[in-house]
Length: 505
Image 1 (cartoon, rainbow, N blue to C red):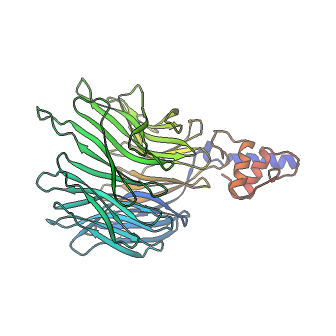
Image 2 (cartoon, helix red, strand yellow):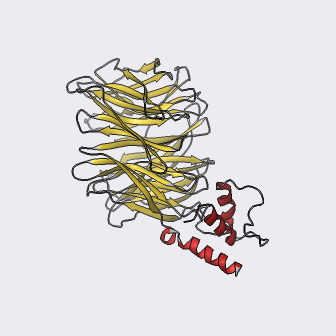
Image 3 (cartoon, rainbow, N blue to C red):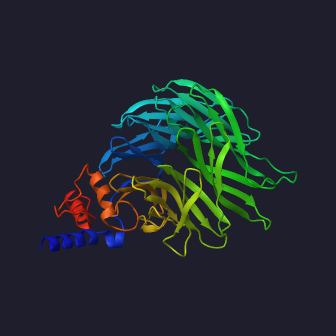
């Protein structure tokens, strides 16, 4: 009778796996109203919440909106910042420090006025700690692109100065202390060729600040565009320039682009960057290959990988690093056909382990823009299906690279939805941040998915091998695996763990 009960319990636990392992929506948070509310990023805070910052278009002038939502869906705060009733504040990026303080960078300006950069420091309770304004040094406009915070509280903001007469850009970087005072700046005043700064990275020990940007290749003798290269600058912790590197697409002749979108540190010395190597082919069409490279502390390419695929269009849009493994997500396809979401796993030397494709709709293109990894080896990627009339989608991949499930969310209207961030917690919660649009407005949207926790190790099976991980999640260490006291540790004990410790599907 005892074994019959356990077998029944096991069947119940496995039968609750959301339809053969599919996740279910636990809750959805939206923030909006009239006009467009477009978030720029999603960050996890150390006090168990999620933060999104973006722009609120209406009422005018535009403001910078910051929302904080608990992992249970409870709203911690919603705030909108505007400089005054004439000037706008348009958020461009965000980050969170180890104490839970939120940093938002935004472009500030007004009709016919110069633009400048505003940095907001917001406390965990939603109160404003300080706001810093940085005005352009050389020309009319300064637009911030990215913000990062070091372990000592210093804040780094990068972007571009923009010249009115021709729209040319020049690289800009500055550093604030934890009180919002300017420590140092580097505005290059180099507008030919046009350069800018797109992302700033601070390594874990705070000894290196690396800025990613782009630089124009100009035009040919026939006035045809030659594309853009990637442009990387490194600084010491005191703001001294260490080196500058310029990287071109692998083919050097004609129009070419080396686009690097996201980066992640591998340890404290190697910076991994992902993007696409794009050239114009002999038939006049642009061809791109997904590209990942690793820069050593001298700025040299220590390792790289160019995706060899049968398609002629591919790229990476995001990267995650976990336990020495590297996960890159993007899209791949042919020019004349639909694209699919692309996920590739590498080892620590950028040797491919597996690659996988996912597209929930065979008649529309799809691509991933955000990647995350859980503590137990499974990886996740989120993006959109069809960038013009898109739906949000998310796939989970096992440690062996198989697609375990794919979730699709169609927002309240028929216009394009999009993703801006992806977070996975220790209990299997999957959080997708982005926006959902209809014909009149777009709202912030944050979706929590609840998935079956029985397949704890992500190998695509539910068996006794998952028990140890489930017990560890709930703080049970030592010889506690034999929960039913029958002298063996097996799948019946896993069923009990899932049932009694709240991890059931």
